[in-house]
Image (cartoon, rainbow over all chains, first blue to last red; front, side):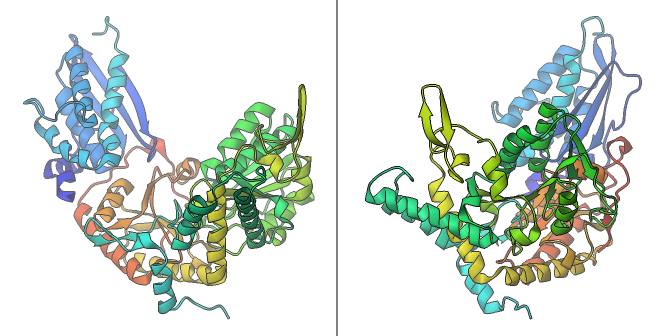
Length: 144
Length: 431
């Protein structure tokens, strides 16, 4: 059962997080916490030509929250804002169990399906996504 | 000479708790989350069943046999709790839903009636949110100010400075749910009373584990939760000194708390009913009465000794891991039966998931003590908390599970890189 949660892809992103840090100055920024454990995360985004040119996450948390954030930055980088928003919606829907887990765009995200067998850990996996969602909600049309 | 629980007694105790004899993820359950809630002995579960099976009726109202029996059993439970705490009289024992409600009751009644702008409420860094938020709310509504007794690096309170003369209330935990620190309530109460302040003690983590004698503690209010001391959820107690309770305005309004209701007003019922509006949690109170009987029968001294031994043994075994930091006093005799710790950069959530896979239940997070964790430069810790039915061999299994977790995550780099979220720990002590 533990193997389903702690897959190699997750541990790899945990041990070597991608896009960790802060973009300064950034165009979009949001901060959020997991009330269960007090973990905090910050997402910063730089925009160019209506797309996410660069996205980073900072903060601390468990292996699931850190790896999920790391994978997220890879998935969202380069996406137009509307597409990024829709992608986040879809992923959060999958983690809620509202829509089936899958799709060809998932890639490394497939590794997070195992988290759904550990309901108390789902919030760990979705924290950074909610934070990115908040950051993107701040985007004004002029910036995008 | 204090007696220890011998292995036969321990086996008998374990047999009294039906829940303990189960496997979780294929492993024997090791329940080390007693500071969150304790398991219940068969006698408590059966007493509650018995009430519903044989004499369910409302209390203090009906003129019939069932109502009389329900009232008798409910009041007997109050008398048992009074004896358990060595309270003056049973009418100083108010049944509540738990520690949280008990503290809110004092804040909303005594607090609103007695605090003025500029008055000070003295707290500590180690309070549970339930002994913080009601005072924050009270401060916001009265203009009173929040102050804190400083915390020393060894996890004890710095009582070297006299309390400010403006202090009207001192609210302090008897035993910390994170550091384990057992606070010198008598000393605090004496200092508070010298300046005319009132003392409320949060006994949620102490009443289940230590012999509590409210007159010798000297506190004015003592709050506890039944579910942490072998009783059911939804049962709790507020003890208060009689003169204070008598002078306080009522809390919730409704039935039971009134003597008379007129077209334009009401008069309050006598103690303790003045504070027990509505139909109380009858089965729960009866269950709590049986729980304190059970604790008294085993003996609080014996329970304390047993937990202290387990804690000392756990601290000694944890010293095998250089990456483990234990928070709170280093000496098991100065702390209650729980150990909060971190292991290198392994996140407590990952730790708890790993231990759970081996059937071991611990708590991971901020344990409803966020200001304390922030004060220590932490966001979360793992916590193992013991009770009378835990054993040394369970601690051994726990230590082996820690080793497995360490080996799995061993190569992980620091995940705590942001300095802005914390400061240097002040209470990290290698066991």
